[in-house]
Image 1 (cartoon, rainbow, N blue to C red):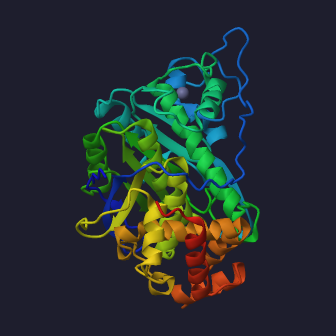
Image 2: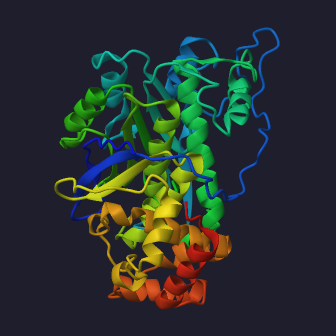
Length: 438
Ligand SMILES: [Zn+2]
């Protein structure tokens, strides 16, 4: 088993008391993934119309892209020309703090004027292929090199090439080289797929009563920001410069004042499938923690388990781990998680859910327990996706003075009709009967 760990720092996500911790990744073996259908279509329906006279020109862009602007793929030259498309007005049923209407999505990033951050990224940092994409929900900075579309094989590649062809008419299923510009759009498409799948799982409804007074970006006041650097040192310099944190591997971060979620990573010494795994893990971790506003921590096993579930749906041979505060602990993970989990259950070495269910700090779930919490979330999802959605929503409705343990008990009872002990027992039986021994 080959293990390598990249030291990193993951954000603490707490509105008043930021927690910090280390994060990294561990290689494993390919296993049959638990693939769940979260409602995302399997064929891409084209959404962009191209000019007949100039085929590269998109007539109905719903995004701004710095490189598309340069190449004449969109007719806009700057992000500010697209304000009507990119910014959002929200009307409240009754005045909120004296306002009946509020404007959201003004060009701010990292709680600074967007153009300041943009200049740093596009010019000062001297990155090789920086691309900035913004739409009505995300802001993405991507500086990655080109990659080979056929190696290693990736289950969704054909689908992704048809997505890219929607923007780049020359891309076909035979396209071998994905250029840096195309790769940036790939991550933009992926971000939306993960968002739609998360929203499908939780049954997100922007018109639901709980969203009436919530900010429009799924409960955040600002757009969801994603930064993907080619080099580790650029990611570190960027994070240190803007957030004052020393990191090696990127991080998840919640901006307290302007309420935005940040996902930052790098692609150094990593294949695109690996970058995609970490991207999936961190963005999905942010979705579940930031959904409906980030006011307190969810039970850590559930948020981390969901991030693992989504990452291991992509591939099982590269796992991103959020360690929590302090030094990275020494640990070993099984190269095949299902086999490892089954062994632990049979040897009675898997601690009961009741023991760690109410832990809020991610660092209280040690790395060697991550396969177990991944498996627990997978168990709950395969039992019933709708109930899982309900569970997450109730967990977002903590009552004043309610403890995390009581909140979780209430949420499990109202969604699955189960106690913590029943989930634990059911999960053990499921592992014993469905997981392979070798
Ligand atoms: Zn573009």
